[in-house]
Amino acid sequence: MKNLPVVCTLAPETMATRKAQLLPGLFRRAAAIEPTVDGYRLRFDPSAETLHAVAGAIDAERHCCRFLRFELVVEPGDDALVLTLAGPPGTREFIEALASV
Image 1 (cartoon, rainbow, N blue to C red):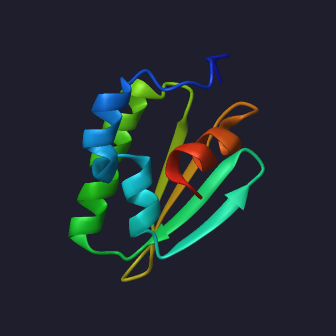
Image 2: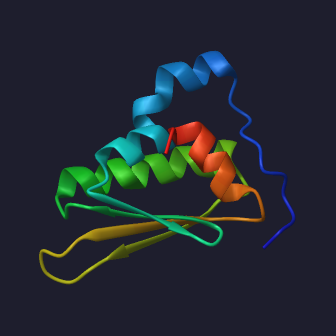
Image 3: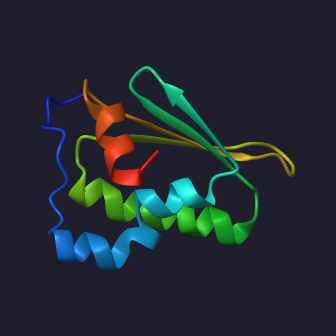
C-alpha cells in the first residue's frame, strides 16, 4: 500500500451535504459493524439497492480518502454484503471520528 496521509480532501461544506452517500451513510445503513486492526468491517443486507449504494460510496470515497483500501465481498445466495475498510495506522481512528462510530 502506498504511504498516503490519513486525510479527507473534501471541504467541510461538501462533506456536510454528501454525508448520506459517504462513509457516515454506510455506517448508518450497516446491519453489523466490526472493528478490525486497521479499520472496520461492515455487513449489509444483500439487496440490489444496498449494493448500488455501497458501490457508489466506494467510488466517491476513493477519490477524497485515497488512503482507504476497500474490499467488497458479495456472498453467495441471499447472504450479506461485506465491506472491509482498511488503511495505514490511524485509519480506524479517522473512520471513528468521521462516521461517529
